[in-house]
Image (cartoon, rainbow, N blue to C red; front, side, top):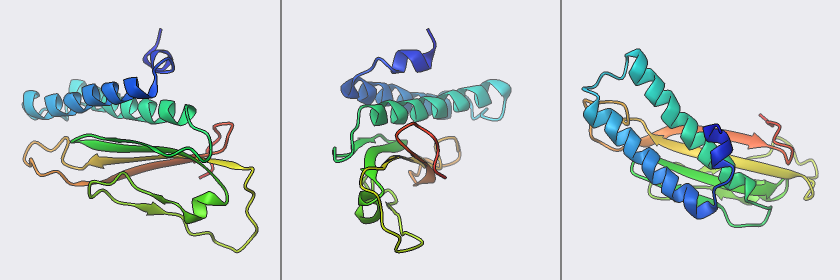
Length: 157
């Protein structure tokens, strides 16, 4: 069983527990790796951590329907917002994990009529830009990742 297959079986509560474990991996990399984040092993660990953050976000999104409140996970090193919206509600919804992290707001290019039956899934991740910087302990959550997809999972942007 792959890690992605295992995560597909998690409940929303279990994804929060997994996020705590992944947050501890960020801390381990920074504190215990002798700042060797540029080695092949360090790079693989970093890629794995980022992959797990993405899998957690995707799993929480799979558990959502438009109109459900967002799932927000806040950790020391990253924040995740997973939310199912529609073409209409995305125009009026601020995507924010809180805790001083950046907020995303979507501004339509045109006044074209939206379709409230068209689902828009939002995965918004904010990572501490100093997570892999061994020369700073300052928490600066300003590295943003976002995926917008339709109900089939196809990326919209």
